[in-house]
Image (tube, rainbow, N blue to C red):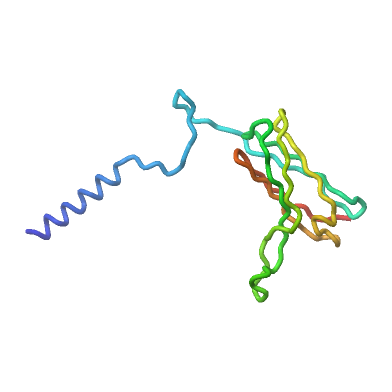
Length: 145
């Protein structure tokens, strides 16, 4: 009889727990209880070319606020210094971190030289990431002819 009561108690607890409201995602709501749906950031570039010494990345951060400071950083596939026998990983390049300020139109841009981004030969690729308190973005740049 004790086993039956234990089983009934167990399944009752499972039923109670499964029926409680469990927020799986932190969904933003406005003051009226409506879900806030926002745009996603747009990060574009004309790309990098061996005929140009620099390349510019243009960003639109719809969730940012004017004068927010975003951090731009170049990442490149490389073997980590702490594991010389390891495989390549996407790691930051030294000296590529730049602070950029979002304008009143929620747009900003950043410019890197090919040397800064370690783009030496056609086909070299880097990933530029943008991060801030209110928004983020990412883009891959491949050196072309």
